[in-house]
Image (cartoon, rainbow, N blue to C red):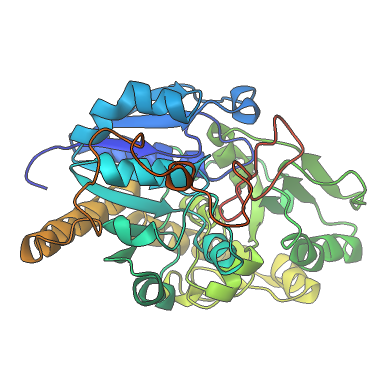
Length: 415
């Protein structure tokens, strides 16, 4: 970019990493944007679940503001959204469809949807869900940034009419995620929030291995695991670790386990933030398989693939220390050369140049409309103001954690 921009990001959370992978992604991105001279305003809905678990209330690189409601958002931040050079709305933002309609009708700069949960989003759209995005809203964003790459991007353009869908994977800050020399406590560790579809592979790849190898040492860190889960005696449990503690946790493992949500596996090309974090810490990764993994890491040299407890145990018990260290070192080199926040900002800036070139070539196309109402949502028909469609319940969220006031747990990028 030739000059710095004013950027507004409306995301699920940047102040709390508890039970979600969004915060660490946003934190690293805004720090890198600030390094490039961009001025970032991050707007976050003040939700009870995150309010009680804020591990970084004022992340570096951005001015962070909380808002209470859609009315509060529109009343306080209309000027910033109107004048920003780039406005990004993230997935799983509360009332995200309303937010997107407001942003795309108001902003004079580039508007982008940042889908940190692409497979979950597309599955929801196919099922008729419209909580934070809709088929009608997608073409109005000039840029669709996606945690999923590969063929899915072309489908978003061809089926949903996005003018431009591009990958913007998660990244990892090498200042926070780096090798740490620690006494080895565990042969295999896993960091991840509970989800129904990740529990079977966790059982297959780790817990069954722990039962078969009582002498081995294992650890699982993450919230929301049901109390009825029966953990083997040699598996240590911790509910939460703040991001500043992740490097120490990885450093105390001989190997670390990566497990992918089922929807992400089906789409492919959907790396989780934990995959990059572990790689940056130089810990050899044992992962399940999904299409596109070998486009990010070289199998057997930078990542190991397990499909069963037997595979896992073979790595833990038979892999020489020299090879184990070499795999971890190779993964870290890959992260540092391709997956830092600075790489993501460079990608984002290149996408903005594409958008500007596209708009210059086709001046009539501007989010599918001409920013109909500078005054916000007030003059819209009621059904458009609320984001309702036939048969939907206003304000309904896709998921409920049972904690707080009905606040959902983001599914596609859960930590």
